[in-house]
Image (tube, rainbow, N blue to C red; front, top):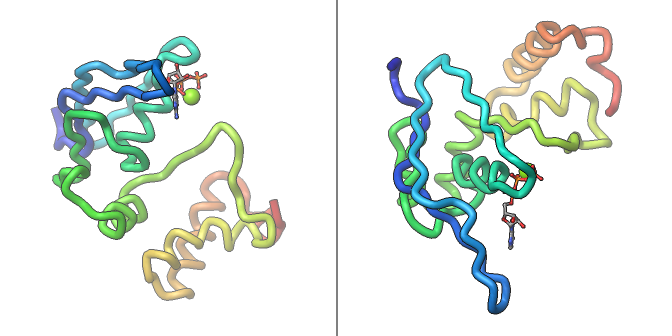
Length: 143
Ligand SMILES: Nc1ncnc2c1ncn2[C@@H]1O[C@H](COP(=O)(O)OP(=O)(O)OP(=O)(O)O)[C@@H](O)[C@H]1O
Ligand SMILES: [Mg+2]
């Protein structure tokens, strides 16, 4: 396989809901290589979102480990996790979470600005991305 960019090892997740313990993930191993596309398929409630949150460092597994670009997520603090997410991860949610008071261009620029990219550079890069997906004419529109 190509370089591994994302992997997890023995990931388990359970939720404690009062007296009920729900075991959602149980010893899950996964490796994703550079340039690879992977789909996670399963019935509603089977744990897809739970897994994505854990792979993205938004939630921690009950046991097991996750590695993103050579970093063991369990060993990072919130600031380091945030930096890593900002650089290497993108989430497309079921429902859009755009910032209503900003234009499409500004919404796309936001992660770059948070990542401390100079404004002109962020703007050029965001414009290029929007053009790629056919949204050039909508760049200055709000959501
Ligand atoms: N915070 C929580 N506390 C208790 N149980 C939870 C919590 N979050 C999720 N669960 C339970 O964990 C299981 C997996 O939920 P999850 O949302 O990961 O499923 P899913 O595969 O993404 O479902 P869907 O296809 O409907 O999006 C479900 O049984 C759900 O009720
Ligand atoms: Mg889900």
